[in-house]
Length: 212
Image (cartoon, rainbow, N blue to C red; front, side, top):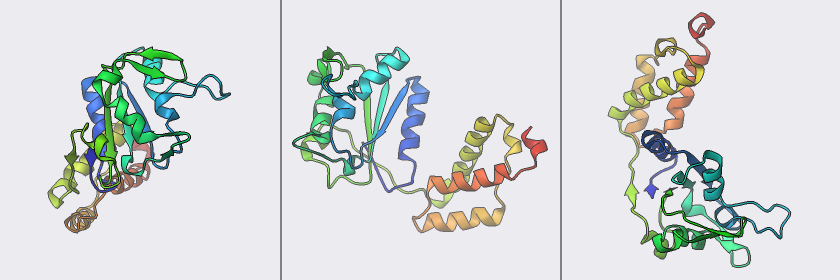
């Protein structure tokens, strides 16, 4: 469980981790979820019958060990009638249950013992204690001024890959812009999405001759 303020890159860290270990990734934002169907699946008695996220990702990539990421754990919802999301997570995070996981959508038992599960959250106050005891909690701090330049360079590399252009085709922010971002970071308000927006604005405004 990665815990930290919004916008500091918790989901990005987990995507990168999945990429480094070569696992396909399945992501879902559980903020305000009204039931646990994304986890347990929707039973065949409903017109919207479908397997849970784990089974869907395994089938899509023909892989038994995908990386599942559930965002905004502290805002997970649900009800006694439709199923509490956090209660479903209890089983998913328990090895003895995960190896004999019953998917309501498939109506069958699955072995999810090789599936990696990670969460992100802005805090832990609203997450049930029994679930927290099953998780390794990593507290992340906001980026500091010395992190701004490396973060900008990472954003440039991501955009260059997306646009399929050389890194040099993506302009670097002016020194005064970097200085302003470092001031924001010192105030604890710097977010990775701000770096992405600045780099994207610079990249898309670059002369077309550089991007072709």
